[in-house]
Image (cartoon, rainbow, N blue to C red; front, top):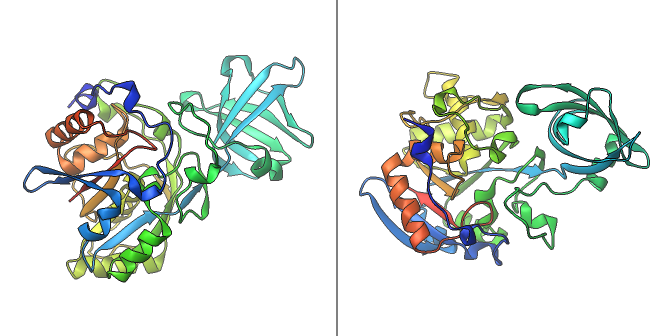
Length: 338
């Protein structure tokens, strides 16, 4: 297995720049693993495609306004800071630009009452940054859209799921962007159980795997939380033979990470760092079906999807999606893998 096995050609015009409205109008490509067949539908058909008793597991992490602009105190040179993870009071791991011109101790003025001091260099160019006036972050920060999206959003809320509530992500769990409150109500009315977990999305969402052998890729940790009630309800559903349908790769990583920590049939509550890198050959213990978007070439996300659906099937699916002019990436269309 090589990283290049997960590469594919995508015409640039298929990279979605704006979200569809209403949210549930995205196209939905259904992958049936047992038969190897594909079916073309729309996302609002999800109510027909899921069955009473299914358990839908969603990531309720909320994107923080993590991009900040400022200037060096002594020279006035422009600086950009992208927050990745809070590690203490006023201290964040962050990406800073221009990194090579920001030695330790550099002070960046962001606004009246708020500044940042650039700290040590960690792995992959990540820096520690200490803020004064941290309470102003929510007012001064901008939504950190992926670098391939060049069209400004009319409303930052369009880069949040309708069920987002736990602050902490540097990017949205984009598979959930297709859901509306009405669609969720319809699913519950049909007898589909809707549960929420939390995984705060970090750096790897922005970066492809850059080593030839993906097993040598250092996956970055993300903080997650699986509460006792949700763990118990998922355990009960598995014991009763009901399907666990994960919305997004982040939900998969959190549940499968928690499942690896104990060898019994019971899924235990979990709070801590998730560093699970899922590659083909992985044995899924919890996930029975997956709703996800179309991912970047050579990313850890397309590798996870290939582990779940099979690499050759995913290659076939992506070729079909390109030929049928599906919309790709964060604001693109979706897949349901069953």
